[in-house]
Every structure is written in structure tokens, then in C-alpha cells.
Length: 187
Image 1 (cartoon, rainbow, N blue to C red):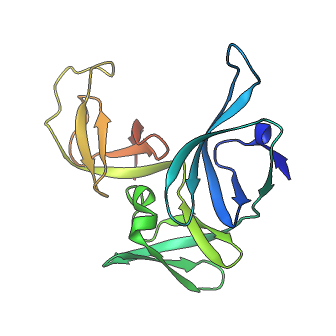
Image 2 (image 1 turned 90 degrees about the vertical axis):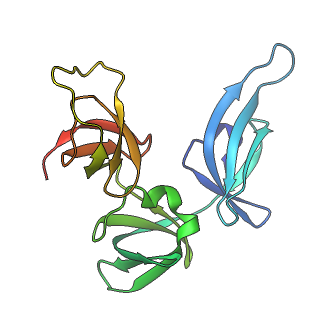
């Protein structure tokens, strides 16, 4: 059992038969009254997101999740296919459940799948990935890093704001948590 004050972003717990993932967590001390926990929660199965408050001493049951390394194979129609790297077992996950993660995944890329018992509940991508720029405005000669930047479409379709000196065909390191440009990379 965990108290609400111990909940952090990324943690998952069970409540009333639902699997709840904490997206944001913060202490709030109003001018009058007791401290409360402000939480942004996501129902893992339905995808619905709610903002709520809990008393810091409220207890919840932490969910035991298992992760397995897998290889992203391909997406066909509305299903993404993955293969376990140890047993070669294949998993199918609906695209609508992992739309954010798919923006940063290339075929044959290693990722992790999260399981709750035998139920697949999500995909974990690396914090940074190397992607190629497929479309952007021409680079500007003499541009500096501190410029306002320009949009660049990466090979997965995600659009990232990049410095003015970046040109089409370059490989960039992209932060998957924030969806931001980190630095140039070599492939």
C-alpha cells in the first residue's frame, strides 16, 4: 500500500478494479485547511484523463508491472506488431493505445512493453532517439543556435522545432518525453 503523498508521475496503482497511471503529482497547501495532493490521472484501459485531489494520507494499492524488451516490427492497419527478443513471441497492440510512442519508433527498434499480469498496457520508448529530417525549410547561412528555429518533419512523421542551421537529410537526437530537438547525431 502507498499513501497518496508517495505517488509520483509514472507510477501505476489499482483502484476500484481500474488501473490508474499518475501523469502529474504535486502537494498543494491552501491558505486555509489541510494539505492536499493534486493529481492528473489516466485510466490505462480506457485512456480517460482526470484531474483530482486526494488527502496525503489516503492509501492506494500499487500495481505490479513487468516490462519486457521487444522489437517493433511494423504497423498494419490499426495494429502495431512487436516481437519478444528472448522468446520470439509476437504481440499486437492497437495503434490508438500507443499513438504518442509511435511518433518516435522506427521499424526494428528496441523498446519495452509493460504488462499487468498477462495484459499489455503500454510501450516504453527510449528517452532519446535518432531520427532523420525528411522535410524542412532550407538552412540559413550564418544561423545561430539561439534563433527561434523552424519546424522539421522527421522520418516517423513527428514535427520537431529545430535550429535554423539544420537541413533536410540530417540525423538528429530527439527527446521523446518532450518531443524536442536535442542535438545533431550520426547514424
